[in-house]
Image (cartoon, rainbow, N blue to C red; front, side):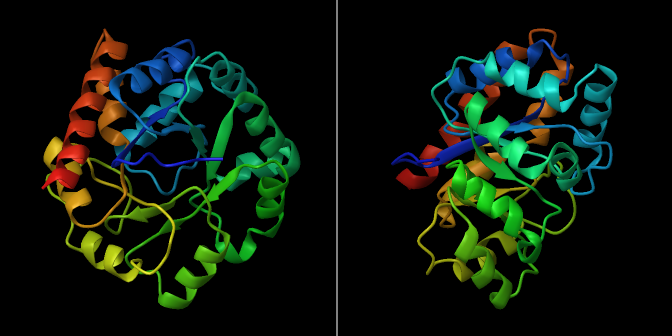
Length: 255
């Protein structure tokens, strides 16, 4: 199960299968080389309701490239890394494969956590029990609009870390850090679980500001998807972007 480092964590996301199916292990290893503390690997689904245009387009390319759950687990298993891996996908994929089988497949290839943005905590019994049985963390997302009663319910089931959504809407790089980020972090101060903030993070100063605001980690997705898609030498490019955001996160703690 996931253990956060003693310093601020960087959690980059990329869509498995983009720019190619063969790139999956190479990108995972590049992210680790750049300083990632946990790596979030997106398993493509045809209706990604939580994702903005950048990741939606990456998912479409990945599906066209032939990415499937079977291929996903095969390619993830080829990555030789020490950092924890987390899969982010939608519940339809898990339900169709079978909840127990999906979690077992995750554990077999070294995936230590699962994020399912369209799964309410109230409907998570089966997946929660399967995760507990296989020592896999179930990570929930808390939005700025999540009320205190639902936060209480989520915190009773979350493990590894809690994903704090920095702003309303879908994923996508932004120019600034939303003020709602700090409001949500303040509401979570009493809970003893690492808090990682995502949605809109793309720059070193974003990472620094989020850690200064009280987060334990920073999640960044669209910026890595763009970096991988726009650079022929994508592995080197995502490694450098990882290094930049990790530097920002660490500097946030030092201030």
